[in-house]
Length: 388
Image (cartoon, rainbow, N blue to C red; front, side, top):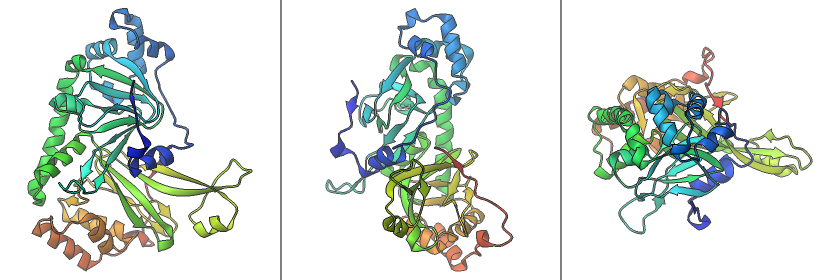
């Protein structure tokens, strides 16, 4: 029986995910396995019919995880995989547990979180960076590949259906995953000499873990327009996509099922509206690294910026390898908040940055780039796709 997540030990960020991001939102579960295939994957492999296995393979053909394997490997995987279900707030495994399985999500939502202490002091504040996974995502493979204890907690945010590959069957896919990890590590390590940061061993370990997980989350507060419209964003920066979560406040009358989006808190307080607070997630185009700071708020147009040369890393430092890219990022950021305030307050740790990077940032901030996005000649529009 999976371990239940005790409420008194869930960090605030977990409540944001489970109670706000998904409360009342109907998840679009597309392309799930048929009941027949689910039943097949609960049987022992000796009882699995070949025709049924090929049918299940056909149903899984659109999941990226399966596309890299040969037909023979796919058959052997489906012959051995197990269909499992987890209810909301059930742990699949805990940080430090011996690695036992690789999981593939068929439907639902699973959260991975990592315990990070601000210092070695036992009384120091603990942070819980968190990654949210959905259909088609795979997790647990890195710890099996490296033969190390589980590096994260994994728990179901809501009812979730998964396929499980047991440790003894991991050899079927291990070589494929080793190639992926080698590419990720090569890219990650290639960043260090170019930017000159002096990472501690602990920071490298955290950085590598989250590069292997292919995503990292950190909550940052920014302002869109005046201070009355303060919102909190969360940034997922990954190789191939960037997901952004933002708190919206909805108002809906007691007698109406409809809801209206409002950022005017005073209006909501004066009206007898029922408060329905939700998070809405947006996703950029899936090409390279992306970084975005907003949506289209009237005059405050903020674009996603293709950032093939940057990483968002453990201590909120944007690592840049190219001055022109950093200049473009500063221009985009300036539309939401003065660029010096955005970069210096949230993204640049001057004490740990190299002298070269520090001088580069100061030079750009001193120059104060033109507000490119507020220009009348700007015809670009934000490239956001509603994800819920």
